[in-house]
Amino acid sequence: MSYRKLGRNTGARKAMFRSLLTALFQYGRIETTEARAKELRKFAEKVVTLAKRGDLSARRQAINAVSDVEVVHKVFEELPAKYGERTGGYTRILKLAPRRGDAAPMVLIELV
Image (cartoon, rainbow, N blue to C red):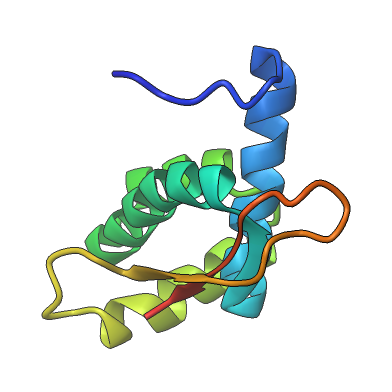
């Protein structure tokens, strides 16, 4: 499987995606760079699919991916009812203006 390294070593990259994933499920939408959002989408789709499955093994896998247990509890309570009939495409990426400091392309990633 190919993925973006985003200029980080493995540990820093995993920690960054855990925190981004936690924030996405906690607030419903976050603003980040386009490259990060495109990679984050893969992780978010997997966690929502785990929430739809809903068993203990899926919950433990989600806790491993998301750093806050309360957020995982919220995901497993709310999202299966919201996305019950949907088979994929749980996130939406909307382009924003470039970042002021370095003109990096910024996007808003949100749960549909």
